[in-house]
Image 1 (tube, helix red, strand yellow):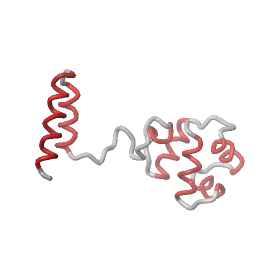
Image 2 (cartoon, helix red, strand yellow):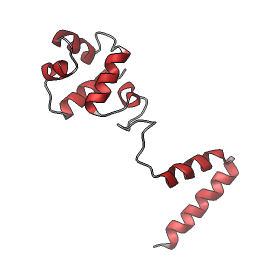
Image 3 (tube, one colour):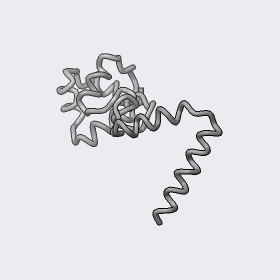
Length: 109
């Protein structure tokens, strides 16, 4: 787990350690240990932290820098389909697509 992120999320929410501990139904001392990395953050508590701050476990774990994580996205369905289709292409076809995008972007200027 990325303990710095747990602290940063708490600070971004303008909560004290005591307030965060209370919201998570934890003793303050134990919460402090999790936040500074002295104790391993158990999975069930990580889930509660994610729910408290409305972020993904991916973000808390440091897998992604997107607070919504890898599974939740702000992409539209069309954008998601485009990405999924692009991923299926070989390197040559991906290059062609990128070239065409570049041409289309430049034609609007």
